[in-house]
Amino acid sequence: MRKEVQFYRKKLDNGLTVIFEKRKGPVVSIATSIKFGAQHEKEKIKGISHFIEHLVFKGTKNRSVGEIPKAIEGKGGVLNAFTGEEITCYWNKLPIKYFELGADVSRDLVLNPLFDKESLERERKVILEEIKMYKDNPSTHVLENLKEMLYEKPFGLSIAGTHKTVASLTRERVVDLFKAIYATNNMVFSVVGNLEWNQVLAEGRKFPKIEKTINSVPIIPKNGELIEKRKGIDQAHEVLGFHMPKLGDKNRYAAEIFDSILGGGMSSRLFQEIREKRGLCYAIKSDLEQSRDYAYELIYVGTVKEKVKKIKNLILKEIKKLNQLKEKDFDEAKERLIGLRKISLEKSESTMVGLLQEEIAGNAKEFYEYEDKINFVKLKQVQEISKIKKYSFSALIPE
Image 1 (tube, one colour):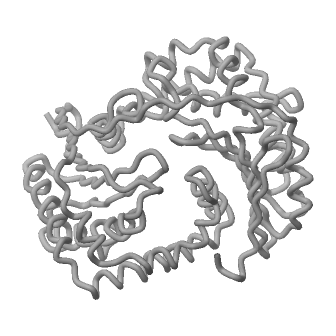
Image 2 (image 1 turned 180 degrees about the vertical axis):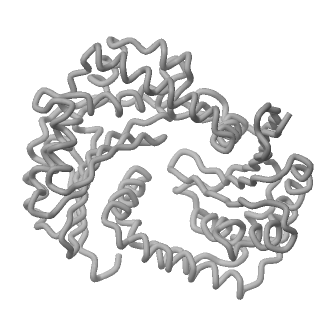
């Protein structure tokens, strides 16, 4: 860990895990996260984590639906949440002098939601519209299709769930799951800001001691191909994907370098070869999704339907060519990734989320070892990743 970083971690007697980075600056980022996300859901309740995330903002024992955002935004802060595969996170960012307020709102959301029946039904309609929006958006739809090609259900399904699963979630089911999961021993309280460690611990100790067990749901990889046709669209959308090293694997950092060289930005191999050199598309990008329990690479392209197959073959060709990656390009990719990490660290909320990801993977301190770990990767490790044997493919093309 870098010497200049002041990082603290402690598991309190109430079961809560507290992580904290002390840094200079006028703002503080605060999050309370539950170690339960979409990957823990069985097929019948797919989308329930995301549903709960929406519902907690509809009122708590201490604050009405209007008072929750006003408490933070009224002080010039930002309030938000997200549902991932591994966690559901409720966070806020506000001027440092309002730290105790931000901690209290964060705590209130995860401990005291009302789940009012009328509010629940209204929010169900909102989420069902959200699911329709994802399906109507060609680029989002084709990405979600690819996930279904890469993994068996239920993991392969959307984090938001399906129309069928969300429509069938009763208030009783939602409340029962909340009570079974939202316990202190399943929570991480994370803070990044110019505070003292004892201030952060004091807020963490205000959580009551509640212990519950989270059951895992198997994540089963596979591969497949799906090509759909749709009326009313002019552009074709295609995504190629394949499984990659997870966060606990020895090649996890090699996977980041591989992704950066292949499709990270305008200098990447895919952008230069397929867009700049050949003019076959406007949008082309890659994305590496990595966690403790799964990892996969996505390459998305927006093009014309006549070029879908050609571009697919060019992508596979560029991947294969990385087996001949030169030391100079390899070193440049390392420097680029390290630089991008430093830029992202300017935002306290980015650091907060990064620490959370590493904590869930096993050790938050590894977040600070990034530069050393990237520099330690050998050229051969990246070359080996290029030897993919199987992949999945999804396309949505004009009818």
